Amino acid sequence: QRQLVESGGGLVQAGGSLRLSCAASGSIFSIYLMGWYRQAPGKLRELVARITSGGNTNYVDSVKDRFTISRDNAKNTVYLQMNSLKPEDTAVYYCNANHGLNNYWGQGTQVTVSS
Image 1: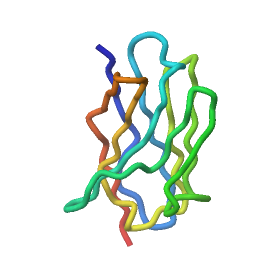
Image 2: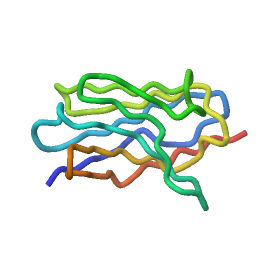
Image 3: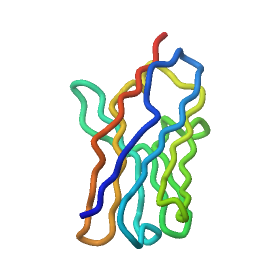
Image 4: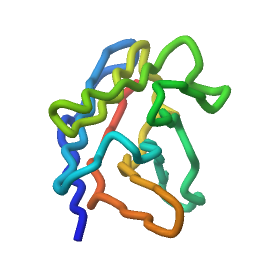
C-alpha cells in the first residue's frame, strides 16, 4: 500500500511563500503522475498542479507564475513551491499519486494566508 505524507503547510501573510512536500512510500515512485490538489471550505477539491513521470507540468490558471511543482525521484518526493500567496489560496492541500487504476491521496496539510 502506497502512503503519501504531506508537510510544510502553515500560516503565512499575503505575499509570503511556503513549500509543501509530499513523501511517498513504496517503489517505482518515478512512474506515477503526481499532483497537488486543494479544497477550501464549502468548495470542491480542485487540481492545483501536476507533474508527469517525465517532468512535464501543468497548473490551474489561478496559480500560474506563482506556484512551481517539482519532483525528486531519488527521494520519492514531490514539492509545491508557493510564492506570492493570496488569501484565496487558503485551503487544505492534498498530494495525489496516480498510475492507471492506482490512485492514492495524502492526509492533507492546511495552508492559511492572512490578509
